[in-house]
Length: 386
Image 1 (cartoon, rainbow, N blue to C red):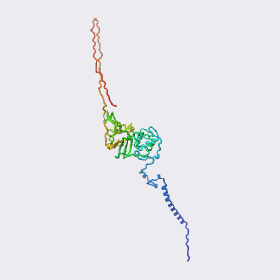
Image 2 (cartoon, helix red, strand yellow; image 1 turned 60 degrees about the vertical axis):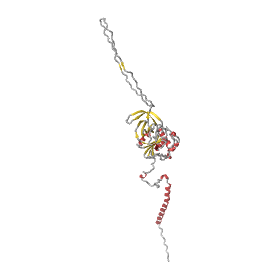
Image 3 (tube, helix red, strand yellow; image 1 turned 135 degrees about the horizontal axis):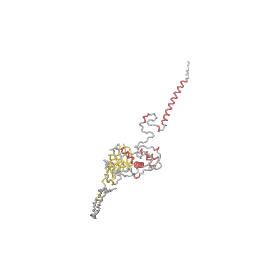
Image 4 (spheres, rainbow, N blue to C red; image 1 turned 180 degrees about the horizontal axis):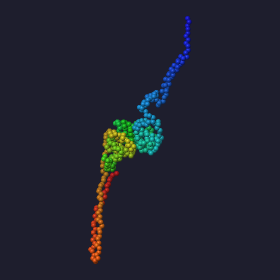
């Protein structure tokens, strides 16, 4: 029985097909570990946690991103936003009043970002910036009021560029003002976040007597002598009335006052020292007084903390009202006008001598009397007091 062996003819095209298939399979197997390695090896900052593989996004996809665009600044009144300390240069010397330094501009911008309004960002450390640093030292660093000096040391600089968060002591909602008498600082909050933080000066706590000029509602001004006690009472109040511009009041000359406790108001003043100095009002620096009145509405709450009791313990404790100065007196007399009447000088008549030797009787001269009115009296006015 013959057996036949079948021999297959070699086909080069078939071998090429098998070769291409093996190459594609090998490439796919190699691509899997390569892709995993690339995902892991990419820099962390280049990956988006919501899009880890870097897929293209539409133009509207980033509109609601919480990350601010490069170069944007932190909005004023967001004091808890962290500082980018890696980009802030260190400070190796003190910054004090009267200096001009580029780092003062950085200081002013940081204070602005934290709502401690220092005035213009101009690289000059003037009185407005000093008061802003006072407020930061007292409120954030816990420096006692008597020791706040407004000098920016490296320690103050470093603390300034750390995250800062200031929470209100009361949360009524909306806009409200908190005045801290022991620290001599006031904070205007809106929805629980600081909008304006300022050094202030409140009642001096002494008794005073003075002659004051008071602007009346009818447009006239009244001058009188009064006494009072320069106290800013603690308590819970509400803004009651606004006055534009300057106003002469019993407690002094006030700029853009907003009243919250009878005659006590927040207002601007050119003199806002580091200690209580007013007659009861809460003085603000002038550059802040320019706009703070516009940030509050009639009816917004005012909490005054005196460091002794909570404001709610006092409620709406009224101010200490003034009383007439017992030593302020006026003396008034009348002035009389003097008049004098003068009669013309007398005349003498002489008769001509006749030709005859007869002489006429002696000439008679008559003089009219002169009348003089009473002597003049003078009036004097005396005012006693300061």
